[in-house]
Length: 160
Image 1: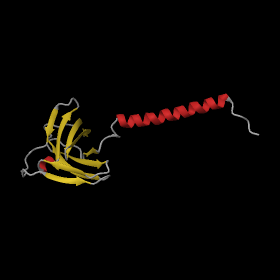
Image 2 (image 1 turned 180 degrees about the horizontal axis):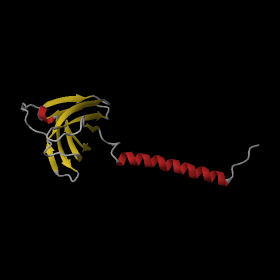
Image 3 (image 1 turned 60 degrees about the vertical axis):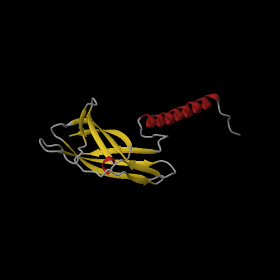
Image 4 (image 1 turned 45 degrees about the vertical axis):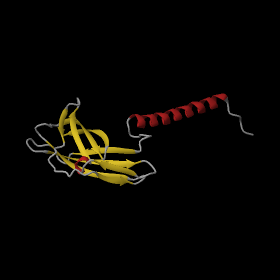
C-alpha cells in the first residue's frame, strides 16, 4: 500500500505549478508588450538593417534595409500603392525623433496604381539599399520609419 501524500507535499507541488504558470504568462506578456507577437494583426511588417561597412568622412553611408511582410490570415491580401515609387518609402530621425533625412524623390514615376497579392500564410521579403548623407548622418543611434505596400513600422538603427 502506498503512503497518502501529506499536505506539505501537495502544497509544494501547488507552489511549483503556480510558479510555472506565472512564468508562462510572463513570457507571453513580454512578447506581446515588445511587439514580437501581434495577435490581431492580419499582416505584419518587420524591418532589419545592416550597414555593410563603417562610415567614412565625406562618403555616403550605405545601409541595406530588409523588409519582411507576413500574411497571418487564411485569405490572400491585396497590396496596392499609388505609384511604383510609393511601394517602399522611408525617413530617418535621431533619438529625439527630430527629422534627419528622407528618401530622395529623384526617380520619375508613372502616375499609375500598382498592386500585387500576398497569398495566405505567406511571407514577402525584399532588400533595399539606401544611401545616407554624411553631412546629416553621423555615427550614433537613429530611428528609421518604413512604409512598404501601405504597411508602416519603425526600427532602431545604429550607424557606425
